[in-house]
Length: 252
Length: 215
Ligand SMILES: Nc1ncnc2c1ncn2[C@@H]1O[C@H](COP(=O)(O)OP(=O)(O)OP(=O)(O)O)[C@@H](O)[C@H]1O
Ligand SMILES: [Mg+2]
Image (cartoon, rainbow over all chains, first blue to last red; front, side, top):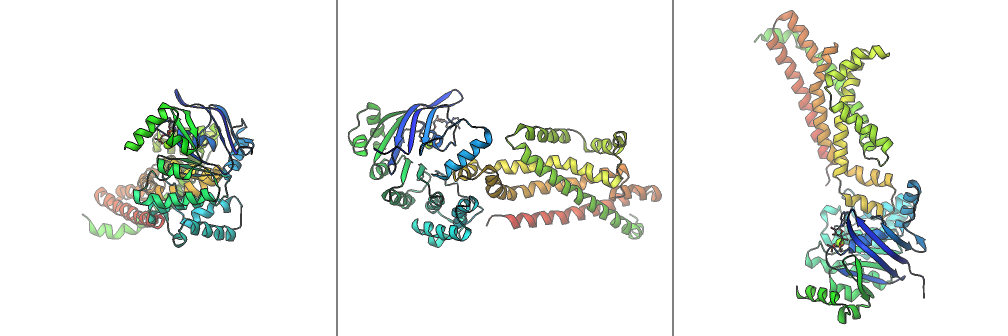
């Protein structure tokens, strides 16, 4: 049994009075493809965002690669700790969040160059390889405003990969896309999965979740309601809430 | 309208207009420096920086520019600050417009989507790198127009330095009224020069704005 790359224990998160996460325990093994599903408002995004500390934790522990993520530290030290941590965790957002003042290539090279991961020339070389990998070699010099949603999202994935992360977080990365553009982004994620990148994928696209993941977590009301391999969670759910959720989604 | 008189004295107004231009440009530069510093400070997470910046803005936006100028020029000597009229004019106008410019710059920075900061932080960039490489380049494009509005307000508002006897356009108009008794002509003449300065400046702002626009 390998040591999990992400270990979450007793995680609670409140926004003011609102309890969003009510005690989550979770282990993610290296090379595992995690799908996080559940109704809107169940806390999927919040859970994802606590892992790289875009959201602070109210209670509990998050461990990443053997290190406590939410350590109490003085301000400056905490910032350094988080920057270090985040270099190893890539994140892709629903609305891409590409840097509009930079070309596709510059979006990808920005962090590796600023953080001195590589020389400028190496970073450009690497970025071209990554853009090629996501099928956008010919769009390197385009600004985001001239890319389609699907292309933007693929640049965003390349940008995250440029820091050679050990874990990738995807938060509904195809939800804002026109249906005909979903496939091209899903294909890139599937390819990453086949290369054994460790991934946590929040998605409403249950067919994709079943297809790509090797572990599914169904969240309801700030708690893990059911989890297991996709064959079990999707085909033979144990919990009533899971059944109700699946029924509702597949009816739509 | 005494055209002959206007033809005779307009060169003196042109000279005075140059003083208005100089005092405005220097005050704008001072205002931009103060405004930029105060904007960054007011967005800092450190209250020791935030608090003075916010106070500066509310103090200087909450009191008349004329009173600020008088306080500096007439009140200054009482606490050992002796300034020439021109110097007092630059500082008085610049410090005042800086407070407005701070709000323009702050507004532009705040208007950059939160997702941009998140995307930068997620890559492991430090706070100052996110600011300088991601937020400010985008905010810069959005602050050109509001800063242009501030600057034009300053050019027109610079007329108040005539009250501390800086020999600029308004002062010159007043001076020639007392010798010619022709206020109509004198104020028309001054207005033409103000309008010319403001028009040229507006074109400058538009040109910069187009220059920084996203493709
Ligand atoms: N910054 C915030 N401040 C206050 N409440 C928040 C904040 N972010 C999320 N919430 C609330 O927390 C709850 C869970 O939100 P979250 O975004 O994690 O849900 P989700 O499962 O990702 O939903 P969706 O499928 O719609 O994306 C919601 O009720 C939401 O309104
Ligand atoms: Mg969400």
